[in-house]
Amino acid sequence: MHFLSGRLMQNYSGVDILACENDRVRFRWKDYRADNKSKVMTLEVDEFIRRFLLHVLPKGFRRIRHFGFLANACRTAKLPVIRAALQAPEPAPTIELANYRERYAILTGHRIDLCPVCGGCMVEIGLSPSSPSPRPTPPHCDTS
Ligand SMILES: [Zn+2]
Image 1: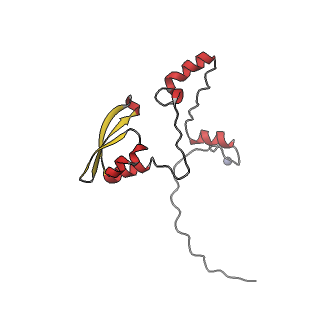
Image 2: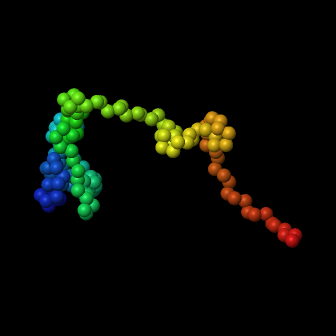
Image 3: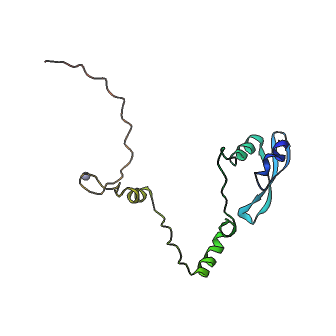
């Protein structure tokens, strides 16, 4: 684990391993959501490695991060200022769709809540019970 802290943690920015004992790892990390506050967390080794491996990219991939005014920490505050300076219009507000039916209608142009045969409004009445296992085919009498 100490090998990890020396070599691999360079890419796992903002994390310092403080201790590794009894199958637990205690480390300091930066909480970017809380003003880059430094915090200490203790995890089981397996969980620590699992989380660490989430940050390892497959071969050939490169991590893309936003810097400057697009960095997560300041984007919300700086973009309106930049738009005002450039006299650029505000983007259209994102429409929050209520449910999957609306998303389906927008994506496909078909409404899932209308009957495809008569166009009537379909009402959800519940789940249908699972069908019983198929009956064996009755004896068949071929008269030809
Ligand atoms: Zn119908």
